[in-house]
Length: 269
Ligand code: ADP
Ligand code: MG
Image (cartoon, rainbow, N blue to C red; front, side, top):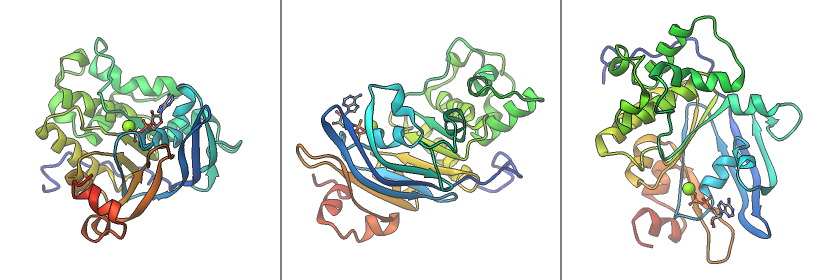
């Protein structure tokens, strides 16, 4: 895709921070579901989290922006640092954590009765931030999410009329409107058709120089297409999920060191 064909990238955006999980462990009640997860998630590098269902990927992702505090509480061990600041410490208020670290889920969840434009602005309202120029922020966010050209003439239409893939890009635009440093994506394409999936992947690749992206995916081709760093999670029976192996995506898929990684990435498990 040439620069002319792509929606214009936004210049002057702050480049996102480094998010670092250090020895992250988690318990639901007495049950330990994550053990000692260390991952560096750097700006400009898409990090993919892969592994079978139930190994703690979503739990880890939620811990990365304190989202797990909204579901039945998991006790947490270790720490999560955003540009060196503990997101569970006093340096970063939780509203700032949630603003700087956005999240997109498997099932697109725009407010269907709300207009497309209002959906983009909805996240901003939640963080209590105001903008001097609503129209400009809507356009900027939709452009960054690769949706502007498709919806520019229908910003006042309800979001429920968009296709599933468009709704997911709208959710990305909503996350981007608060200008986060990090975007966490939990299986963002699992509910989408291949064409919509490809559009989301293009969006990820266009955004990656502007912020830190972490994506959970069960699609091995997708992990290879979009990520440079890849962490393979696994939970043995009655054991917490651990990172078995991580490194450059090319390495994880081309010459994994652990036979369990090789089995998983080659579909033998
Ligand atoms: P993944 O995203 O890799 O499929 P999850 O993070 O969703 O894995 O789940 C990890 C483990 O934690 C699973 O065994 C799951 O059953 C358990 N779990 C997840 N959420 C909760 C919860 N709210 N309460 C109790 N157990 C949970
Ligand atoms: Mg999950």
